[in-house]
Length: 478
Image 1: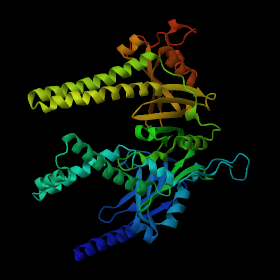
Image 2 (image 1 turned 120 degrees about the vertical axis):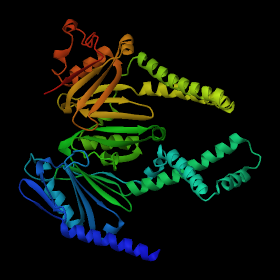
Image 3 (image 1 turned 60 degrees about the vertical axis):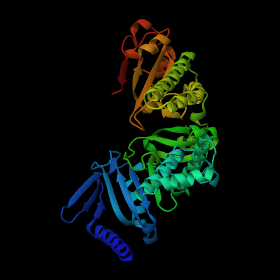
Image 4 (image 1 turned 45 degrees about the vertical axis):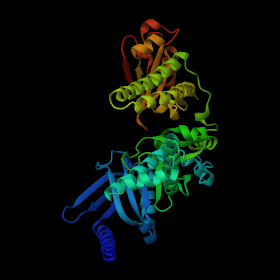
């Protein structure tokens, strides 16, 4: 075992040394050039104005060696030629390279000197945030994975039945439901510990700073450290996200709505997260600081949606439970009567839960506009399992999609979707009153939607029948 470990370690070190020697880069006035490879030489040139992010990552080995991995992105999808990774690079050289490549992000100093008083620390790690770590969907998922992994390993060694016997001996003649509940709690504890460990590794020593060069910088990590830089000029708003369990404990996180963020499968969510799950009041305060607003737009008073929107959510929730229970009943009739008991017992739990979640989802609905165009924000909130409040810059809205199903038309509701080049690309105001939804879209970006509103409506009530018979209409600003 030791020789194999030594060989692997030596091979890794040799690989790093080799990559360092065969890779070179240079920066000129217009482009960032990278040359790498031996058998197949690869030469890449990125225009400096297209560079959107320069992220630094250091695992424990690189930290000991004083080196980092540099990832330069243009916001294109991972795998495209617009993403370059340099490994390894001395930390001092990496910091200098990042400053050079993002020099175009520096905002002009209107006063001609002095630092902006808004620069500096926006958020610092607080150990009290750790209490939110286990309140994640990962907790039951990792707990179930641990239980399944244990049974799989036991099966490999022909000891699965012995595991069942040992667990059964712990409970003796206890009822089956009590045994199942105890095992579920045990798996949740295991999952909670695993989730806590992952959270600490990812977010330990988190800092959010505004730099004088016009960028926001997030630093985080315990063993593997990461430094993520976001140009403020690319910021189009923020999203305050409240997962159900964290929301019940008063927690929320802050995600950036920005253009040019590299989209890949690795670390997809955390790359745009400016603040991990923390107290909701702090999340709103950080949102206000990042957006340079005196009050947080994400805590603005929202216009509620009609009662018809509650009915739609109740029908969705109850319909989902009915379909699920019907499937269990069919399986019970075909396979075993035990499933019939499972069906009626689960129905006693699922129907009240579905009604509660539907009502909660309705209470979450709301929208408003803050400030005057183009400096104000469109604020919209929706969701229950994942409640999200987005504050989107009105000048960042490039188009609207108006959706209205047959059921929505009967209920007098409409969904308007703001299209933007940032974040997920679209943010919806769901199931608003038809007149309110179209009036909101018309007022958010004056003149964009108005030419497409049914001329028969006139100037009195915008949108009484603006969508007409079409299920969806799209309006885009050129």
